[in-house]
Image 1 (cartoon, helix red, strand yellow):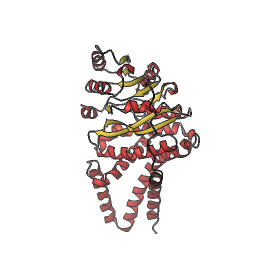
Image 2 (cartoon, one colour):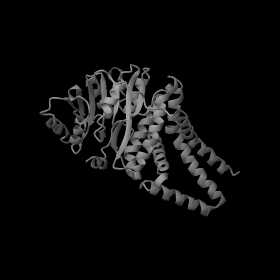
Image 3 (cartoon, helix red, strand yellow):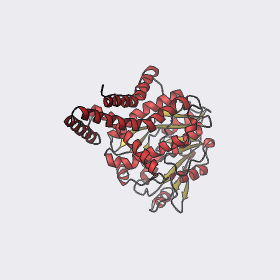
Image 4 (cartoon, one colour):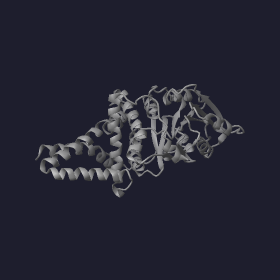
Length: 381
């Protein structure tokens, strides 16, 4: 057999095997969401909301928080703001005549990065359970009650949920999030999940430790730090939120690549956790190392070796194969691949991960600053 064909098959198998293994485990185990342990009385909760030039959507987000199915007099809202627009004025005006939710508005004199801002906001929170959410997301009204119920179990240190609906209708993002939900549910069944989500993450206050100041995956890093304290960090698919996202290839890169950089950095900074902390270190983290760090290179090498193998047999066929591939990618970013869309969603994620590796190697755009995506703000409106 042609050496290039053999290499192509090896790289393809290396890419697919962990997925197939997870699918087999999921079918055999059929994990259920973590059990809810409703407390006798609902605890008081602090909600942390970071803001930066959110004037076009902040009122919508505040109304979203007031729509939560939870006693408003048991909620504290800690806003950490570094805006140069009138976001803080809108917040202050919104709360002028409100006597239920307690507002703590922290205004930074300069923008220092999201992780630094969150560290300060978490320190300012006064209640035993702290929720972190983002302005460009909307929460299911029941999510708070479901989240706090998990903390009745003293071994639970953090809980996150799932993106049940993508604002803007991106099939690329929804396809990836669906696959991710199955993976995270299986991880929680065995021990704890790795990835936490910015739109909704809940933490036990006494478990919170500061994240690194240049973190681009602060929620995931904090959850990992809590797992290091021997608390479970869980994923519950019944805790639902909505988040805006693009489908167009280049529009997705701003949001998706930076997230990928953050996740890869967290893994590399905590490689000493591998094969420690029970199944978290021996099962959950190895899979994420494969998916986030090894798999993107396997995908690239598989593509290159396949094209080269076809070229060695017939150059015209190689050109045709390349054109088919590019056409498929174009249709994918248009949400037009039908039942094959899920495969493009996974491929798009691998593209972001590969680009994140290159960004980290070049040390470009890896600080703790997030750029405002005006298109996503428009989706929220």
